[in-house]
Image 1 (cartoon, rainbow, N blue to C red):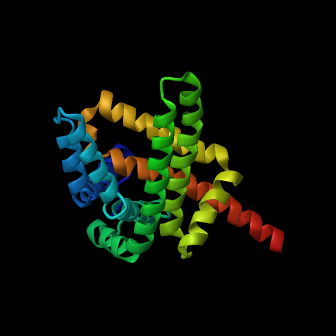
Image 2 (cartoon, rainbow, N blue to C red):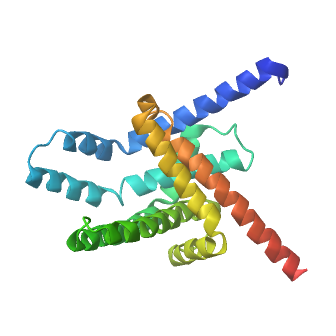
Length: 232
């Protein structure tokens, strides 16, 4: 029997908090090699060892971070579309296995592009204010495309190349929604790292994924409903 009133609301809130914490801990577990290396990098004093750690993390990103994050988006997708009672662990593992290769391919593409851009801007010199101002919109655009890629991968049965194209198309059709998702991501990162540090292992990734996919779902639903009305 479903409870109503204040008790019902508090129970519902506590259930959502448990869901967010549960899937976030799963995401951290699957990203453990990268998290371990990032923590170690903070204590390295020499530049050569730091660069070695960064390159190692970059090599692991496509094979560890991207599949784990795709699975995270798969779980929150079920929540957004109304199925909040599915078993998290089984669902996460299913999305992880089903989308592993596409996630790795996406990770290889996006990691290569991001490091190429970083090297390019680093070579030009971040000391120039023009380079900094130019890199900010490019970074926002790039993160928005990656977020669209995660959302489309778990929401639509498309080939890898079509998913990439649709990620760009979705940004061009709803740029403000995509940019809003990136800004919310930045805000959650800021709050988690500088205000409520304890949120990092418990809710940072899951809360970002939930909001990002929620925004994506709104935009995607508008596009599909518009296409349906045009075909009638």
